Image (cartoon, rainbow, N blue to C red):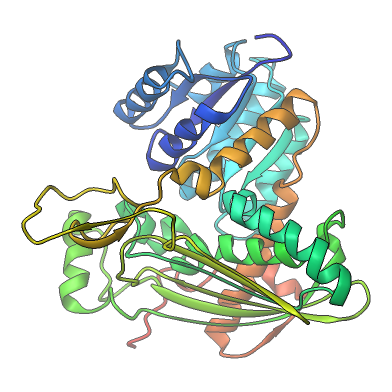
Length: 416
């Protein structure tokens, strides 16, 4: 590959990899060269997708991460494998690069960076030990409605009446695709770890003055609550058990399907700012709902992905198979339905990957990087600590660094 074109390989061949591949239709100067997954079939399917939509004419499945690194056509990796494989993935990357088996410009990683603070820190250290650029794949801070909304709010509202002081962010749907997501030990927790990572970072991004570093906001406390509202009910616990061949037992070892947090920040002038987040796997609606609200002295901003510019209606006489052709995590096929016409664009994957590719080609560290991923993990662990102890956690708190949530240890059960 020339220095003006980036060849990339994906680690993991599932749902999120396919989302990234589809987004690359609108990203220049990048080719999908390969996909590696523990499930060879999923790698082959994702590689076939890249070929079929024209973003990787020679994309193929690889047997290992080391094999992809050894291919001179692959200059960067996108890590989209499961949370429980995070450390072994980065250990193999560091070993392959340090032992001279191949070279890379950089690596990106899907959220969360780690299942706990120590894992996230290890990912950052392994990446930096072999001199790679790093990009944290937090798509929502690249969503067009978020970036454009922030630009308008800060240019017009904040510039004339003062900075925003309250951000609310929520992500809700009816539950993850794959069985391992429901397992606290494999995923690192429940919905708090899986989805609040988006909300806390998106809200922090909106409250940060354009051009200022992340450090311009200092978190000073967090108060959180979590519960299992739906999926510990016997009829729903049975669904999870059946889908996992009996491995997932939400009657005895549930993960939280609802969580909320309130984070207090101080800006550089000592002004207090508030972030409220809500996440759930027990939302029953048209499908995935992402919402954001931002408030300042004389202005406000609202985003809801289930209020798109396209809606359809199907009467009872319209029948068809279940699917997600209208919106991610779609829950029905009849009635009034919103349609997210280009999910990869609306959810921020396109702009996110454009930034990552351009940054790597220019030899620059992306603006959203593993430092951000580590900070997000620190906040999530503080939220778990708060929920477990039923009290506000003052920040900074050194106990967070070695904290493992009870749900990740298989020791959390709100009904006991």
